[in-house]
Length: 234
Ligand SMILES: Nc1ncnc2c1ncn2[C@@H]1O[C@H](COP(=O)(O)OP(=O)(O)O)[C@@H](O)[C@H]1O
Ligand SMILES: [Mg+2]
Image 1: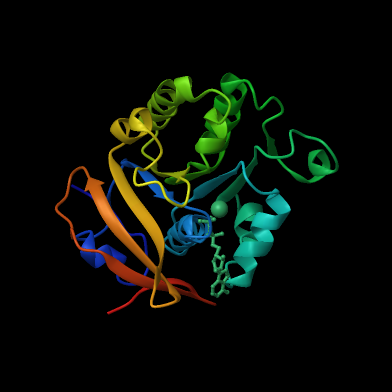
Image 2: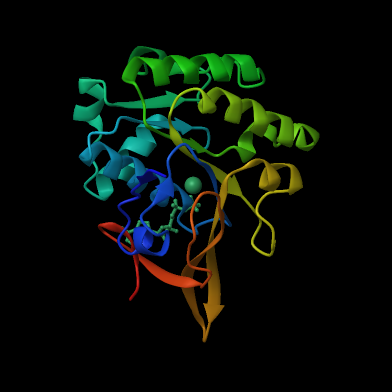
């Protein structure tokens, strides 16, 4: 089984080489746990490895996403120009100036077909190998009953492409799960990020709950976020 390296220091080792190719992995966690940084680092490391990537922004303005990535030294602009990186704007709905600047815009966020069409086009255009959707939760926020069907539809789109994908899933601070039964059972892998108060200090950790196609660590691994991104400790 071919593995896709996350490039996040320490993580590929506990995944026994990386994420099995074509897996759809749920990256689940509460607010501020590092989901966006993790997924951006995954894409950036792909670019360094000549693997084109797509970031679908549902939670933040695309300009903000580029800015956030730049903060870690991950300048995606040249990769966008080369056609190796694409940002899908599923945030602005084309309102404001985004139409002048963004190549991929989902105009009707209530219509999953529109979303899928734009995503498909972006994947095809740049021959993407890595895809991040940040977050899938936003897609079914107002229709939780459709969560599973939305996840399955997205999986079907990605299955035909050879992409390895991260679906960011938002859970509330005290929630033990990963985003609801429909979502959790539909994916190939689950990585959960946590932020816990220990001795009056917040500690970051992650756990690989599930990863189809490989053995992996079942331990909790502590990590930190620095100006270079995420790094597992020891
Ligand atoms: N340069 C940095 N150095 C250390 N920590 C940072 C840096 N930038 C952001 N962070 C931390 O990352 C958190 C945000 O991570 P993010 O991936 O956006 O979280 P999520 O997407 O899970 O809500 C911030 O709350 C902050 O604690
Ligand atoms: Mg985020």
